[in-house]
Image (cartoon, rainbow, N blue to C red; front, side):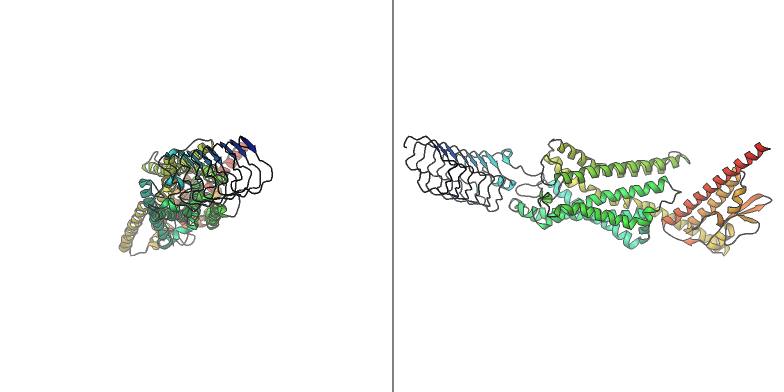
Length: 616
């Protein structure tokens, strides 16, 4: 037995090894103990086996070893203890493995590694600790590994305590795109951007919400403004997310590596991830609603598309419910998400911009790449339709006007900000799906700066940019009111009396005929033009005084005739004061419908006249 070189004890049902059971086998080179029922490795079991080069233990369910359990294996170059049941690596467990170069402890149940566990194995160059859930360790975890060159772990925190002999690129996993060993946000510029954008989004959107809920409640009756208010709430939520992450970075400054796992698995991080997803998705959907509403109003100004006006509250509620479902789905106890959807990085985002395939990557790709790209295309197409419609209407009057260019710039800015926010994410996501590596700095800037920038810009684009327009409108109304007041003082009449005297009557005037009756006898375009021109003048006079007709129809319009010639056109109404833009728009739509009816009646009358002439 002294000259035995190879010993195969595999598949023998061995349950226990006694101390020094291999005594006298000093020349043994190969020992195979695979696929037995070993549970422990006792002390000094391999004593004096200095020539052993191969030790095979795979297929056992070993869960415990002791200090010095491998003592005596002076020339063993590698040791594979993977796929076993170790829970703790004790101090001096690998003492005596002076020639060991490769140590594999992967796929165990490790939760704790004691200090100086690797003492005596100073020549180890590769250490694999992957697929374990190690939670208890100190900064001296790798003490004694003076020649270590490759370190493989599940958590980057271990790389923060790697020996100086391990280059950063040879310690896996690599640091995430945001954090370092000391800070949650390793880039100072990103840290400052997070605070600036966070406060800008909070303050800007809070101003929008307060202004519309307190100082301009009437605007909420308009569907477009109601969507803008909901957009402000959505962007306000993004501001909360950014402040949460910025605050966590400040709280863990200098000691983040020790708290990385606790932070990413905390309910605060999960909440931050939900808020970020909720905000980004509802913001995109409300932009779609605003675009659709504007397209219908501008493209079809004389048609009564009131679906958004009548159901804006229900549409908004549906958007919020859908957003909550999208954001909250990963929190459900479903194996697909593995309860780690929002724990991929220190900033609690689940953007699919890496080649990794963590649990739920298909879901995040669908939401952040495919869905958002579809929304962006819809918004861009809608804004193009709006611009073309406005430009066409401008050309009918004065050609390329200053107002036309202002609208073009504003719409271009809206599309540009959406493009800057979502198009890079969509492209990077598609590149990642194809296996391309995304630079970590690019990923960090996109996630921390590009993604939330819309939340800071939207209140400027949709509300604050309208302040000057509102101010000019107010000045114009004050100017008109002042002019009317001066006329009232001179004539001793009130505004309603002036309007009634010049253009409007509460009842049918003498020598007049109702337009609904007269419309059938229209025989010339001049007659239509006269009626439309005078009626438009009456509506303009009302609107310039902050009043509306409310009912511009053929039954309420009267044509005063003198020997068949139109002398005057009046509209019976009781003018109403309002500040709601939709009320003014209704007058204009009704006016357009009335003109359309006259055109149709004129066409019919013309055809009948031509038919009579042919028959004669």
